[in-house]
Image 1 (cartoon, rainbow, N blue to C red):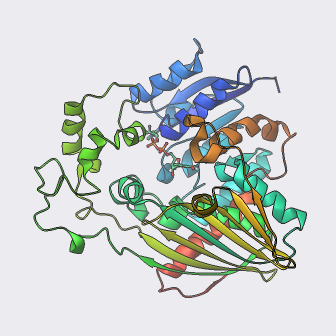
Image 2 (cartoon, rainbow, N blue to C red):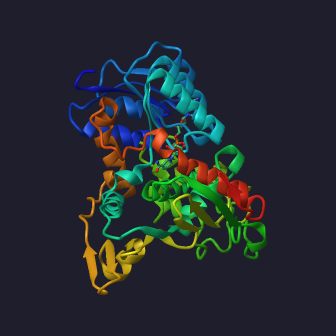
Image 3 (cartoon, rainbow, N blue to C red):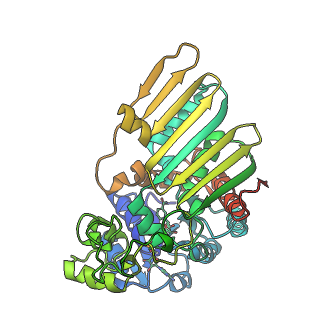
Length: 419
Ligand SMILES: NC(=O)c1ccc[n+]([C@@H]2O[C@H](COP(=O)([O-])OP(=O)(O)OC[C@H]3O[C@@H](n4cnc5c(N)ncnc54)[C@H](O)[C@@H]3O)[C@@H](O)[C@H]2O)c1
């Protein structure tokens, strides 16, 4: 393999753009040779990023996958419902994959991809970007060092943030489970992967409950119109008003607006909101994914974990209880103590505070620096000089199994699913 790793991009949306920008910022390490997307402006944005006059553009994944192999690695950045097919074809053509999570829409497909990769001697790296953040890498290092003693239990919490919930899981791409994946996969597969990675033991059982508590018709404020652009009388005070896309929530459009590079005028955004899913009243959508969910996980080594997801908080937090010490970290600790991790020694009650460098406020800070960390690690992982914590499919599949099992349990009122 040459010093430059060649990338082909399948689906030139928000995630692929982020990865491509990072790849090209790592001068000389990557070359983007091809891309596919039915939306021309998105394809052109990747072509521009590639700075490669020989960049090959295709209108669909199918067209790209009809060609012989055009790169070492294919980035699969299409939506959740269209990962399995292009991933399978790309593996068969001999590509390694950087595959967006979720790997596929069910566990059978994920196992099939893992099998094909093994047979073809290819690597599939799942985009569990949190593994590549300073925060979770540090937590993993602490757990593995034994400072906490034996891990007994874990409490993980994910606050999606209300506007984010409305944007992505009420109006947006991941609002309907059958068209994408359930919330516990679409949003929390990062968390189930992290828990699984930290515990490092086979999972024994999972149970889960959750529902839509708020984002439904019964909570519609009086007089609210079907679209925020219909002269809704409460638009000025509604936290979820789509008109906020023209003011303080404008940055969210970067991920969904058809042309990522376009200078957007307010009247154009409003015209777009009149017809787009993102202009709908959040109480009158066709969303069926939960806005809160509690999951209980039991591992064969005796560790138990809980994962709590809610639309009505912001940020991730983690508590790890070991026989020698406990660890608390994440957004809640940051707000309270202005530090990232606090370790409490049970023997003497001493507190150790660990403060990490904050990633710079640019797009590479995405996912706490995890997007950057993943791309920085990619070449080493493919070329075999990688760290052992890489999110290769075989190492990350259990997080997906936990997530899909949790959904199965939730749909049966929380029954315990034995694995
Ligand atoms: N790792 C993470 O933290 C993370 C974060 C957000 C999203 N995701 C996942 O990343 C994936 C992409 O999300 P996104 O927000 O970038 O989505 P997106 O909608 O912005 O991008 C998907 C792109 O695929 C294109 N596309 C559709 N059909 C195609 C086809 N037949 N051939 C080629 N391209 C096609 C679309 O036009 C679009 O540009 C999703 O599966 C999502 O769940 C992961």
